[in-house]
Length: 196
Image (cartoon, rainbow, N blue to C red):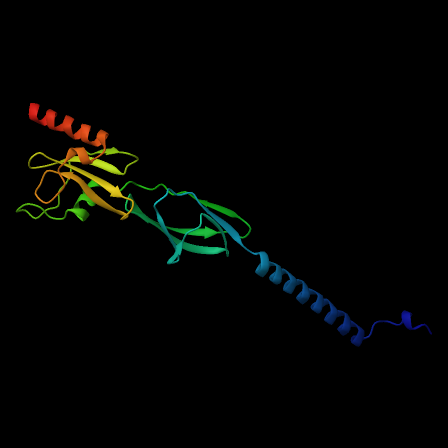
């Protein structure tokens, strides 16, 4: 009798099933190894200069990099903008471009953080109609009562806001030491308010 024509025994079926299970496990392991080695998504940051970026409380200095898939908390801060926070999802083998709608920081918030409380009321100066200059690194506003003219600028070397002109004791008040376009605007305001 021919051995090949015999019906499969339980032993043969067990071997066949074991080989099938081993093949599936090897396949799953191969997929897991592939995902471990190349299972990333990528993130591209489309942000202005002079911003600080934190992702899950880690400082980020690059504008493009690979990340594991998942959810991440991203925080963008700068003296020029209001702080921005968002939860970001990075997908497997996908590129995520992060370009948030950042809002310019309020002139009132800047003035109050630099100058602080003034006068007997103890309130922070609140510059009236504000005009921004030089890529939003300078602004001029009128502070009441007065009128007093306040010009502030973002100092890149110190990375903070500073007073460029404020005709109050203890602050710079020389128009020749600030940019010409800012000084001209202040002179025009002075003429406008003096004229009534």
